[in-house]
Amino acid sequence: MSRYRPPAPPKSNYITYEGSQILLAELKYLWKEKRPAVTESVREAAAQGDRSENAEYIYGKKQLREIDRRVRYLEKRLDHCKVVDRIPDDQSKVFFGAWVTLEDEVGKQECFRIVGPDELDHQADYISMDSPVAKALLKKEEGDEVMIRRAQGEKLYFIECVEYRPVNL
Image (tube, rainbow, N blue to C red):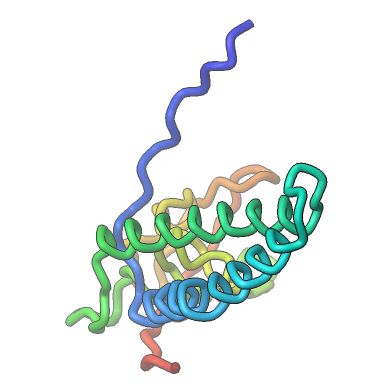
């Protein structure tokens, strides 16, 4: 049995202005604050002598590798992302950055925002524009019926509200 795994499909390169600011803040924190602090702790641990059995030194070096990996990822990702910082002209349709309120047949409502894949871990009510739910909603209007395929099976929803809220930072 081989260990080959096909490469993951490429992510969309769109990100909201708020999402880009969060990623930039994380990059700045890692590079300006956390990395120098860990580097200093590694320097102190290395001064204690034998590095082969020095747990603080080994752990510090591992932390530095993880920080450097994340910094490289953020720099590369932010270079390739296109920041969407304006509201579309037609605000009655669902586009990137829209807050969408859906209602199912029994009247239960769900509200979420369509964002880029890099923003998902920042908010619980965000969904990726690459997800099947977002793909089914894009370019639809208020009042439209949408059949969405979910883990529980297909379900019919009505688009109650489409809104584009101002940027909050």
